[in-house]
Amino acid sequence: MARKPAPRKIDPERLKQAVREAADAYLDHPNVTSVGIGSKMAGGKPTGELCIQFTVGRKIAPQALVEEGIPPLPASITVDGVKVPTDVIERRYKPSWQLVPQTAKDPRKRRQDPLVPGISISHPKGTAGTLGCIVYDRQEGRPHILSNWHVLQGEGGKLGDDIVQPGPFDDNRVDDNQAGVLVRSHLGLAGDCAIARIEGRGIDPEILGLGVAVDRLGKPELGDRVVKSGRTTGVTWGIVTRIETTVKLFYGDAVGTKKIGGFEIGPDPDHPAAEDEISKGGDSGSAWLGFDPQGRPTGVMLGLHFGGESDAADAGEGDFALACAAESVFKKLEIEPAPSERALAVPMAAASGYDPGFLGTAVAVPVMSRAQAADAVKVGDSTTIRHTHYSLALSKARRLARWVAWNIDGGQIRLLSRSGLKFVLDPLVDAKWQTDDALYVANRLDRGHIARRQDLVWGPPEEAARANRESFYFTNIAPQHEAYNQSGLNGLWGLLENAILEEVEVEHLRISALGGPVFRDDDPVYRGVAIPRDFWKIVAYVEAGALKAKAFLLTQDDLLNRIEALGLEQFRLYQLPIAELESRTGLDFGDLKAADDRTAPARRARGRGVVAAAPVVTVIESLDDIVL
Image 1 (cartoon, one colour):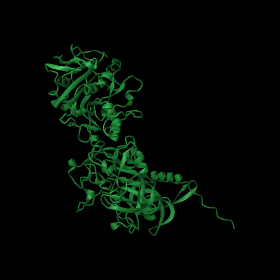
Image 2: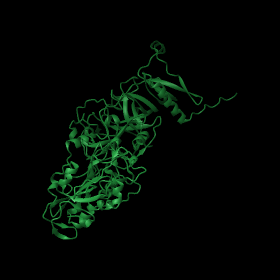
Image 3: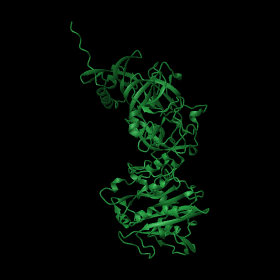
Image 4: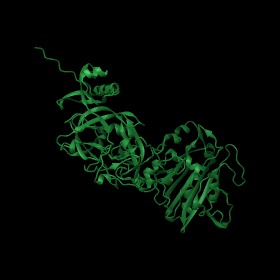
């Protein structure tokens, strides 16, 4: 008797592709809620037969389908000549953001420092979700919070907004609970995901209740046992019931319905959850982890929880949850599960930006006029954009920094290479408000640091390395004229801080500096960008217990003869009163004017001892001309 031929095997990748095609074809059907790969069900239990599984909002009898004019779902889908059976299950989903009021506030819902995965987190205009895990930016190595788009951003949020811990549902004192800044997000087939840069808090990467930190990524397979730690239901266990699943979810009127890719998780009968609920509102953002052969949770992250069933559609089945595939999320957000060699173990206080009290006496950032403030890009509710050892204000109209303020610790300067570092867009700011490499291609314009890279590279190794990288953000860069490069003053301009450290008894070798371009109406426009012709800098320090401040201007104006230069004339470097600088920039430098001694009757010139009064405005042709 002839043997029956063995059934043809299906290429797993072709099956995944077929499921994605089915999702594109059938998710527009109003009754279909998701499409994925699962085990065919019989009597409410999995049979082990692989199938393409549809979930629907409600099961409809064939005759009713005809009466309602709804096309039936296929009984099978052919993949490379092989018929793959389908299955239809009644199941409805929702994003896990609807909250159930809690009477007692446990540690997951209180303010935590350090931040630990498994606790309440949210956008200030949101409610509460879960801090899933600590991740690390692929480019910078800085630690970030990972959660969902609908937790950290939502309908009313935008990149640059503050993130609060705990969420407003758990503590409405949002002004006191800022924990980071939203820097990247995505809502689509790659997942419902977002990251926030941590500010002002320490971190403990071990997930609350699980005792492990995410350090690797894995791919979910049918039948995998998983565990998560969420803000609402705490630690719950589950089993992967469907993979390669695409689900459609409604995210509000402003966003509409979105298709999200991932996998489905059902209850684990060996670890039943309270009320059979493996997730509830507020668990969004939790990390689903795998197990080792001994049944213990590992640091392998398989998915990011983003939704659950809206009700118990199939009685007796228990609750089902949805997770984005971790691998897809990490790729889309450009993050890693563990720090690289250059990554930070904890966020430093310096990451909060320029420190006005760095010298022991206040040196405030410049105060902008009302018009300048209205033109400034906001990060959250602030016009100040903060990075390691420096802060800045960015002009929307000019797409350049109006001012940059930075701290220099001469006793901790490190000689770090710039090799491999590239000029990149500032992750805190929308690209439309920044210049980029397009301005500098095929010409002789120079990318000029406003806060010098060398000035920022100080502190512990990790902190200095971070400052080195962040100095290359385009928000800290200004285009410089070819005439400036040819003038020979570029090097001199960059040595002003060094000259003061070398020639003055600067207390603690610390300097605070302010600088930026001068925006003029007649600046020449090139490739849609007005190119500054003037640059300014103030250097502040403490000598013999007194605050001192010196102001400098690199300009094409002839300040001594008050004759406006025309065209691209030779640049000149001047030392001038801070009050004069205010009139040219429109900025208010506050108490620094009192620390400026340009009107003193006698002063010490570099290398020349005490000399008679010098002109209020002096030309600087060498470092010896600086009046200290």
